[in-house]
Image (cartoon, rainbow, N blue to C red; front, side, top):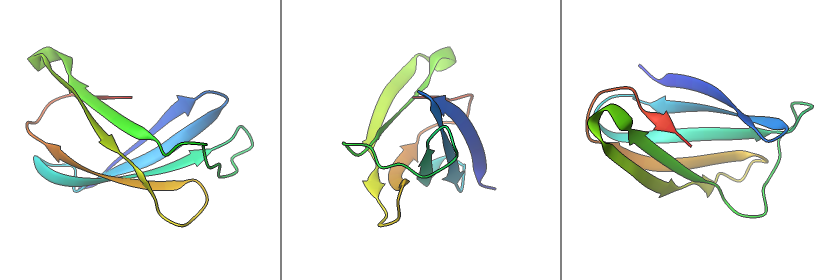
Length: 88
């Protein structure tokens, strides 16, 4: 089951999903939005960082690639274990 998340990003937000949301290979889809909810493209493609502090694991990082639509990015990540991950 994909995992959805939303986080504050400066004056805007980032909305995303992690699919399939299980141990192993996953796709992280991101949409970057300004304060008015409009898609934005940053000067540099975003980088995703993840860690599991309880297991003293990470941070790991992955570059997110533009998907050809304003504000839309995707990264491929490998999740090595289940747990509560912190994303940055």
